[in-house]
Image 1 (cartoon, rainbow, N blue to C red):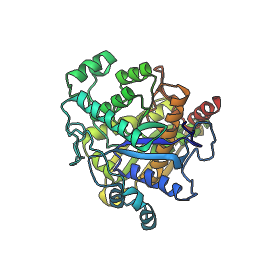
Image 2 (cartoon, rainbow, N blue to C red):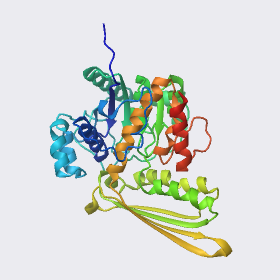
Image 3 (cartoon, rainbow, N blue to C red):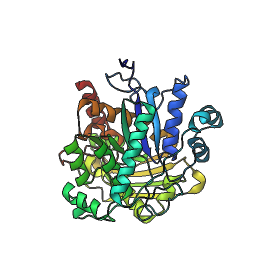
Image 4 (cartoon, rainbow, N blue to C red):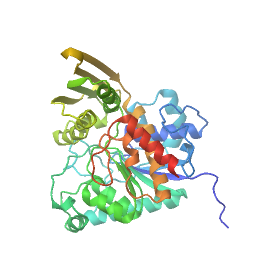
Length: 396
């Protein structure tokens, strides 16, 4: 007779597990397993909901083009301090990335030797599903979710292949080059019945064809592009400006970062994908177009994972008087992003248990370009997104 677990063990399969965000997330969970009690940065640490997996019960695996073990990768990313790295290295050194599906055509500035060679799209999907099954069996987990934390891919051109599931299936059979790695991973997850979250700006489950697939299979999906630093501040500040009737005349945003994500964004096509998700937030919240909304992102290697974001906001107040707000956010990119991915994994698994498939709109507060279930405009204001999530958590 099988004995029921006291808590739910959840496998987290990560695309890009050797990256700074994923290694930081895995290190954080390992510290909690070893008795750490610092829950700063975890938005749902104080929330108790039936079926929500505990942080200590998360198990990691995944794919990366760099085959180095996670301890070596974490050392290279330099997010953790020396004491933290010493503490988690024995556990992280046992985690080696599985060979990944990659494409130079979709992400020109990031490559590696740990690449899976597959004879076409269908073979790549089959290999990804085999990896998921092995991961589930080897770790004896109660459920598995997939998170995409890989480098930003270029946005594919609009076309019929992504517009419907039938067209996408034909494109898969034809090995259509419009289908990139992020879409292959999302398709594999949905095919395997594994909830999927996309923390990158890459086109994946948000493509109409794959969203249709997720609805048909009743598999939870969420994304895209994690909301961590500058856009988080925008979705907090913009509702306040609207409430005070301060007209936003212009908003200039610039970022410098030197991690692998920044390196990927040196490719203009990948950068365009990122700018597309960052640019639509203000108009939605304010209710009018901000004509001079400028976003600039630069790769600056010495900064590493310590991203810096500057915002200059020009507003008009009573009697037409002009004012300015300046925001300078010196972020640790992975320290902001890693805990959000732990929450996304737990919430996707909870949605699966509740039988909620398709786009998980209640996860909007984690993303710059939230997915919605019925085609309406997404909610971007942070306070409204938070209320949406809390109402969903309390509903069952």
